[in-house]
Image (cartoon, rainbow, N blue to C red; front, side, top):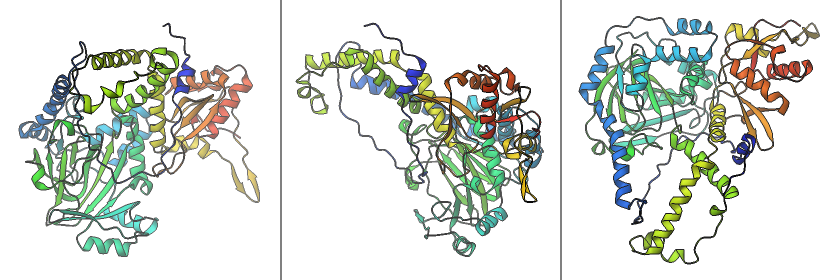
Length: 545
């Protein structure tokens, strides 16, 4: 059957907008999958044993890569980084980054500073998603200024920190992990009493309270192309707050104060390599021997991929304060394919009659788990038809539209950008409109065809279609609290979409308003004013009233 043509706009319509999640869950359920019996002897369709064998081979490759983290390899990485490192402070780094006009370059340089002296390219080639790495710096001030116990105390005193929402009180004694959160606000009197009693404190979203953490994460999210989050952990001397477990994120443990004894373990099985969900708490007898056993001191860094079991215990002679920077949660090929395959099936059912034909009247009598061991020619025919239909699905896959749905989720996850002084002076947030002496002074800035404009950040806006309209989704009005606000977007008229694409693709260069490919001067100025008011663009020079 000949396929009818579908425009890109129609492909976008296949993927309906997903309702946002307003609450970020802190407890992650572990999905337990039961293996069912299946068999097939149809030519071209693999049997149950063949499928399991192929899966085992693929997983072994990943597990083999993970298991290359034996002491010899890890020690090589450590030796490379063990020299005393002297490099500019975080404050100096942030000042330098403010002078870089391309936000993607800022992100790359910030990440290089985080993992220094490990080179970025070898890290992503050899270490990322494969094995842990330990960077010993012998420089306790390397991460100074990122966060501190003094900042922790200030936040408790000045901000509305809530138990269970912003702060967890935890303990791990005699193999038992407990969360001890009382209801209500986490006031210093109660929090520090828990700490003095040997409990660990976990601040769940420090970026909501610390402008420095916010700044660093808002920069790093462009490096990962995925949400960058963080938790802060404060642990009393001689205690442990969490049971052994693995996470569903790539973790960068940044030691800020004191020291902590860390043990990292390989994934226990092929199924736990790069897992989709975090694990439950493990007993010590479940996890085997560690592949990495180190003491992190202030200025040190520990990275481990999702799926690597880990536990950290404070030494008796010092407290520990560290921040874990995380990314790549639900950012796998499989997560994208869930969107692609669902949409492809919807399109196929609309366009191809083979997908709409009815199932055999008696298929329940020979298909299903209870019939999987039967040798029945009807099963062979049924499975052959399934195979034929699945081979057709790629022809209907709206990959670009699915990627845009993934991008919309990412933009909703993103932190808003922290503006540099120059960006503040040339954006709507710094516009010289104010109330003074009983009246409004300095009326709205004036945009002309000669005004030079560009996006505030490389990834701060994206064109997507929602049903019958095209919207520009953006991050500049997002909250510092995860999903506190609905996704931010503004409708873009069809005749303005080319101009918005032109502006996006021109980044990081400034372009004049007059160069926007619109039908008229009035349209060019109206579009620029809309984008300026939303904080999506800024100008080369401060606007004059």
